[in-house]
Length: 275
Image 1 (spheres, rainbow, N blue to C red):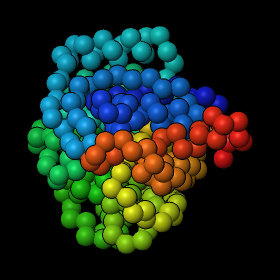
Image 2 (cartoon, helix red, strand yellow; image 1 turned 90 degrees about the vertical axis):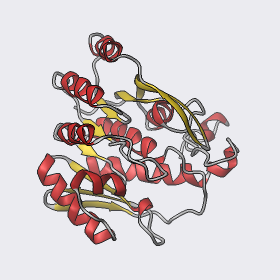
Image 3 (cartoon, one colour; image 1 turned 90 degrees about the horizontal axis):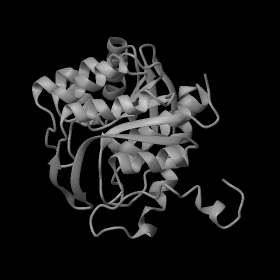
């Protein structure tokens, strides 16, 4: 059932500079009107120039984190980001089997450098988890890996997403930001084809760190709030576009900086009406 203030759990890795992972998710959930909670899968030493080191806590501690939340708090939506290993994926999947909430899966598989983040066994475990998802939000390289298909253009991405939706029973988001051209909006696709398309123009900035994390967390929140996937994706897409448009003003880091998660909240801090 829709909730005015949905309780949203992010299961993800960290980013000490605040632009991606769990840190970005919590900001995105708040911006979308939800109450954010977080379970850590990996402690990541990174900044706007890249990842320096990753520490994976023991799986039994991950189980304790998950149980601590679900034993006490009713969860209205779950967003899953970085999982990293087969054991983590299976632990989260087994836990989620007892959770009655929509799952928005952001399948973190490919680094911005193009490097694979998961081995073959973990990739297969992630495909199995995708079968539990309500909405899957891969970038194009991740969709290509999940489906074993080359994606040279928008039409092939849409067709592949439709097949993947039929295989998993989930809706799939195709992100225009990962295509070429002036269009940077998002398509929502299920087994029948395109359900919706929210069009936004491409912005010229290098400060787009954490956009995938932020979109999926905002989408999870609005979906729990509205129970309407096209409307939720439209809200999240337009919010993220504005967050990217104001990213340069943050002046965070000297590399690829974060987006401005608070862009729509900023007027409230000055006593203005919300956008």
